[in-house]
Image (cartoon, rainbow, N blue to C red):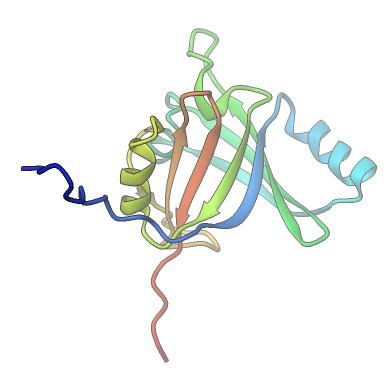
Length: 162
């Protein structure tokens, strides 16, 4: 019970995040790669495809396939994502064409989710762990704020002390 003059305990505050990358949902991956590389001097780092329920859980997008590419400008990664959605699929959240998201590395994704929810941000699915890529073991989740801003939370796997 809260008594007048006593301090109300605050929920745990997450450690400050570190910027990981910025991502853009694009209409055509190939033309976007050309733009970023030919006009902005970016270097294509890698490209591939993702699909399945894992992707739906992370982004909130209905079951979909995504063509993706990572380009780098001055050492900073930019993620380009072309979602293949059914015509009747809702176009809300981080998978709408033209939407950008900023990705943060966080120390504890669950604490961060709890903290941001107090400010009206909502998870777009469930926390997922990357199974097999260069970031294997990283926990990921998209969140959307009350104003429509999209953030990707990424909790890198714990490092063993060797």
